[in-house]
Image (cartoon, rainbow, N blue to C red; front, side, top):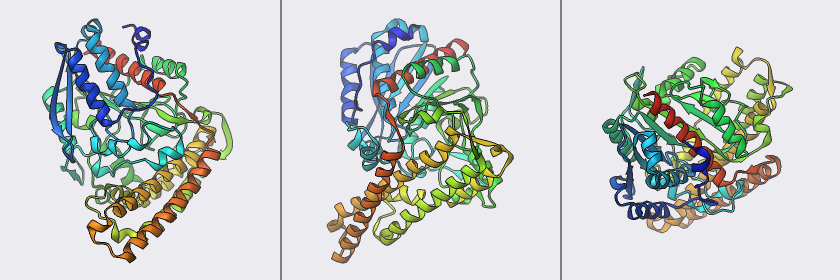
Length: 462
């Protein structure tokens, strides 16, 4: 497999495709290759939009690839857009990999539409924040797969998750590519099993595309590291055990969501499905891979991060509480998301106790300081955007809901306060994050390369 040749075919993607543009691209592919491409509607989003499945090839193994499992993560939709056209037009590659391929360009269609305000740019923190949406865990495709573990029992998958469950159960894919990405940071990967032969190739393509590795704190304290920036896939039980160990709370009492696609696919414990995730950032700083030591204790830095998060959460909660009664908890998905974010006291309490464990002893690296004190502030800022949009959502239908003039004025006052706070936080981030923007084509190139290399390895070792 000649990756340089394959990558030379990647279009010069500069912006992201909307849901409608992705659909049109899918149907055009089927028109261009009627004998090679099969498109089938396999379900509908909660709002009723068709979910299209693209089938290519007739290999001896099955591969399931789906993008936008989180709707603020559209890099993968372009990765699928390219991979489907490349495999349809390159029969030799398709036969070499020996898969029957199944692709979904966008699995969380409704949520992706809520992000389209930033898809065409300008690309930067401020514009991204003002159009950002990420649902609460109980509304996420990736985290509403059924699970039963200790006291945790969840079996309320959303319709989009049910689509993936059916495909996983029917296909039993040997390779599954769940296409995620992050907003700010560095490149890192999740994989079902340790495959050290692949990691130097991952590092090589990210370096070539100018993307630094994430070498500070892991995304979650309980991540198991196979190699620098490469982690074992996480499951619901990992979060449960971590919370149980570092708090005196019942983990099941505060968890109203399920597990991941990987955990569901391998629920028999045999790891038949090799799941792969390639996380890449829109924005990065050169500090995210700086492993030089500072003079600060790592535990001290983590505790300071906890203080910062509590302070910012309290600021956001003060605004939220003023209009909470006017934000519908049933169909205002922005409200559902921000309320969950503001209910993170248990997570912070667990992190405080974890910070004092032997695992966090020693001096912090520059990257660890950056993760704890800068990137954590970036991720707290998105909560303000969710709050802003939850208020805007109700104002747009204030008349239909029969709000009084006093209630509309209360919403407008909270909106102005949230806008001012968000502008203040964005200004701080723009001034202090010292960030660069990753070209979209570079992001797609990394995902395509890492995905195909992993697929090839799995195929040849199945």
